[in-house]
Image (tube, rainbow, N blue to C red; front, side):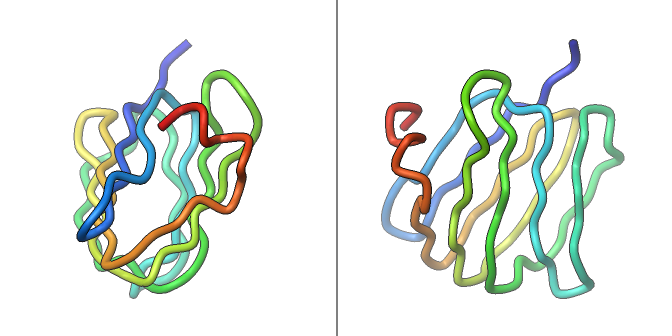
Length: 94
């Protein structure tokens, strides 16, 4: 099964990284959903929730204040001004 390599960092701290099958985010152009094989994208991240469906475990939500969203070769990198995990169950993946 194809998967994404996801990394989320805030300006002053690491938030989450791991393998996922889907990432959803809000950009300045609207909502985007990323699955393995997605074409490259560089976008401005808007304030709102990020949703990650990890390969193992339950859905993870992150509240982000804005930043940048990048997709390239099944790698998703999110650099947020500020971001916090909303799902305490995901804390073990940090």
